[in-house]
Amino acid sequence: WERKITLIVPVPLHSRRKRKRGFNQAEIVAKVLSENTGIAMDAGAVKRIKATSPQKELGDKGRKRNIRGAFAVQKNVKGEIMKKYDYLIVGAGLFGAVFAHEMTKEGKKCLVIDKRDHIAGNIYCENVEGINVHKYGAHIFHTSDKVVWEYINQFAEFNNYINSPIARYKDELYNLPFNMNTFSKMWGIVTPQEAKDIIQLQIADLNITEPKNLEEQALSLVGRDVYEKLIKGYTEKQWGRDCKDLPAFIIKRLPLRFTYDNNYFNDRYQGIPIGGYTAIIEKMLEGTEVLLNTDYKEFTAKNGQVADKVLYTGMIDEYYDYKLGVLEYRSVRFEQERYEMENYQGNAVVNYTDREVPYTRIIEHKHFEYGKQPVTIISKEYSSEWHKGDEPYYPVNNEKNNLLYEKYRQLAESENNVIFGGRLGNYKYYDMDKVIEAALDKIEELK
Ligand code: UDP
Image (cartoon, rainbow, N blue to C red; front, side, top):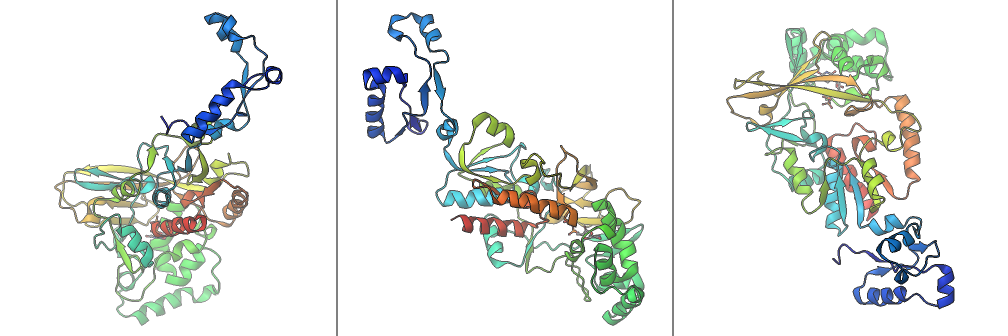
């Protein structure tokens, strides 16, 4: 019972009675109890606002009637009584889990809540017939940061998967990222110089010195053919916006190489966790209380403030009831299919880069872990504009949204008890390694 009782509140006397009597016997008892148990006592937490008749003169029903409306809980006291956590962590995704893990290690008491019926946020994997299905889109871990790599390796062993997507434009297949294999297939050339010459020729008359948007950035990097066949359609499907209206940095995520190297990432470390991502989050959350199917707003309305501080990893604009405006996000819908065959497409990721095919890519999950099952699971990915109620996946970091986010960020900065984190809380197109880095930085800052 000691764990449950956080505050002793003596039954108060009405101020008139107290003046007359000179003391409150309940308060004297409570004080001794508090000294002996170490549980705090607050004689001001509840006030008697009605001068009631003595209970001893009344029967059962009379007593009940007598004290109806006689007491008032003083302002904020509900939260004080309930407050038993150092941190309420909203969202059991990667940011929330790293935060919970580290803070629990620091001796802080954390409660993690998530509105979904599972942990792990968008890196959640579901095991289907021995295949780890990335339910919210493919996640390939990659980083150049040794600290982050060692950090994540505490929770899982990684395989040696190297991401090498295939781009399919109508019936033509190309290697990604843009490299000598792509250029050789596109133009029938062999040497890096030949590729560079063609690109140069294709963009000479454009005079792009400083790319202002994704289209200019892409054209200046790879020329018109690659842009038209492998970038334009895919990007416009994924973002639902013209390439001229998208920021250049999105395409700079991809390496451009004049070597025959199909590794999609330039990072020093890369792989897929053996056993899937959910197991990582499970390990991170070991020893931390987690409540699923729990919506933050409903939870706080019911329980008041249960923690000193809140870490919020949901959408920052939603937290503020969109009061400064609605930030734009992209959502994704997955159509999962199962086939009685060992190998559907021969690669984990095939991008459909033409405009006609409605989905952006097909993921064949087993290839992330070199699965040999007799069946296979694929997911077709359909990109859409986010509307309230949809799952947000990608922040649309164009100028308009970044300006609005900046206003929310300033609002957040003035908060003493709320911290925002993760892709949605920080409105940033973070990769997983950057999420971990940001979480670890935040923890250092708070220590
Ligand atoms: N991209 C493209 N063609 C492709 C793959 C990617 O034009 O076949 C561009 C597109 O603009 C996309 C960006 O590169 O938004 C980043 O792609 P990435 O694969 O990193 O996106 P994510 O995996 O985060 O969805």
